[in-house]
Amino acid sequence: MRRIILQAAGRLAPSSMAVRGRARQGSALRRVPHPRLFAVLALIAVLAGGGWLWLRDSSLVSVRRVQVTGLTGPDAGKIRNAVEAAARNQSTLHVRRDALLRALAPYPIVKDVRVTAHPPHALDVNVIEQDPVGAVLLGGRSVPVAPDGTLLRELPATSDLARISAGGTAGPRVTDPRARRAVALLAAAPTVLRSRVAAVRVSRAHGLVAVLRHGPALYFGGLDRLAAKWMAASTVLADRGSAGARYVDLRIPERPAAGGLPPATPGGGTPTAGTTPTTRTSPAAPVPAPPQTSPGPPASPTGSATP
Image 1 (tube, helix red, strand yellow):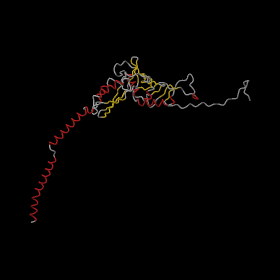
Image 2 (cartoon, one colour):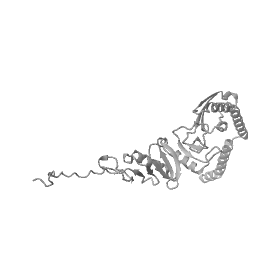
Image 3 (tube, helix red, strand yellow):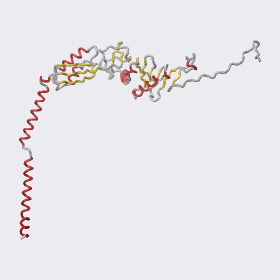
Image 4 (tube, helix red, strand yellow):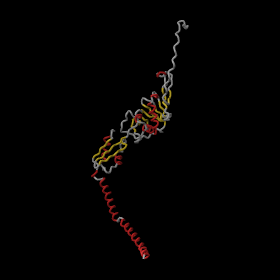
């Protein structure tokens, strides 16, 4: 009897396994989304995208109030009007910064703009202006120049700008090679030192030379390592031992040399006539005073020594 039961169970096992396999396949088929569901989701995505495109350029979010900041030059009024006209053709959900820059292209003083939208109708535009680093002499007139060489013809050349000699330039930027090198030198200078530069010239012997107001000439050589050279200049100029120098050689920034210094004299007095200036690579140590000798006995009226 037991053998018959086991044989019957063996015959039934494959069929039950087949039933379970078909059940799994059926559940997998039931998990596959219907094609109509894909179509519905695609339709919803299209409607949502189209609605967003309609909303972002609609009058519901159109720009009605424009606040312009950062303008200081003589063309501030014209630039403000150009910004407002370009901004009112936009929306707070679709700000076109390139359109603003195209509207400001006739004004070289404008460097960039930063835009902040406040939906539904407000827009803040911060205009970033070019800061002149020097003044290029063109045809007897001083024209301020920006760090990238842009000529700021609409700005007045103030007396604190370093003077740069250049050939005639009819375009919007400096084209003279020497003047471009001088502009690059001034653009790399710290603001404090740049304000002290009276003029920049190019010398065959010393390369780029920055002449300070009430100070020495700075020899830079080429445009390499300008940051290190300006740092060396700051260190030397702050050293009291370099006071009175006629020039500072910065071509090797690790070893700046202050030249044309008057020689040190005993007691700190002024140098006597006929002495030559010196060059120092480091603050000189004070020169010790000569030892004093005791005075001898006074001479007698007859010229012989008294006892």
